[in-house]
Amino acid sequence: MPDRSMKGVFPILSAPINEKGQLVVEDLERQVEWIIGKGVHGVGIAIATEIFKFTESERDLILSTVVRVANGRVKVVMNTGGESTDVAVFLSKRAEELGADALMIRPSSFIPVPVSENVEYFGRIAESVTVPIFLQDQGTAQVSPAMAVQCANRHENLCYIKVETPPTIPRMGETQKLSRGSGLILFGGAGGAFVVEEFKRGSVGTMPGSTLPDMFVRVWDHFQAGDEVAANSEMRRHAALIGMLAQGQGYANWICKHIMVRRGVFTPGSDFARHPALKPDAEHYREVDSLLEELDLIGK
Image (cartoon, rainbow, N blue to C red; front, top):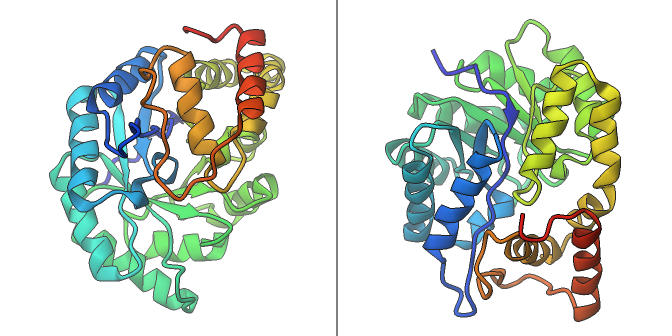
């Protein structure tokens, strides 16, 4: 029986990269310790980690490092999607061997295929491992609520879904309604921008970025205590920064790592993104720093 107990705040780790494009392992280790120290319930290695930009050996290094440092204190979720079923099965088996507690996989999307083919894709992957799988529903690779239920009925390992297709609020509500009785467990993502609204619609966890784990843990704790007003207050206070981190075309990777340096997690020079990724200009960085100062986050 796969682990169905996962819930809470599971930040997606950022990959510290130096000017030469190399992974800075010491900063990755420091990030995992820092995030765990903020009270999170799990960590993820996924698209915000730029995992799709790393070689197979680099992926192994990232996952094995995170598993070693976490040392069972929190759950570790690894993205193992691929554009072929065979590749996804290979990556999934390898992640399980290296100690991942769960996998996260989006549908194949390079060449569109019928829903039945993606259900088969997920089913074959689920049959190849023993750990649970998060179906990743994104705007460019969607897992509709109906498809999610088909997957959950196909195999017991397909028991989680990370809902990210915008607008996520109605998407979460629809998924909750259609999945009743299927055993499917709902998580939110998309930077956590609408986490409170998603909690109200059946989400039991969120997978935001790595820069604000302490804030999202406070939001989770407030909501669990029944204090929705306090949860929303935290979200409103950090809304501008969350918005900054929602920018595409690689901007978010640069900004996230800059924030990790400013918060004292990454060392200066470990804040490069893997190419291609559009880099913010100096004015943009000044705007981010102004928000960090206003929120009293520098060095913390």
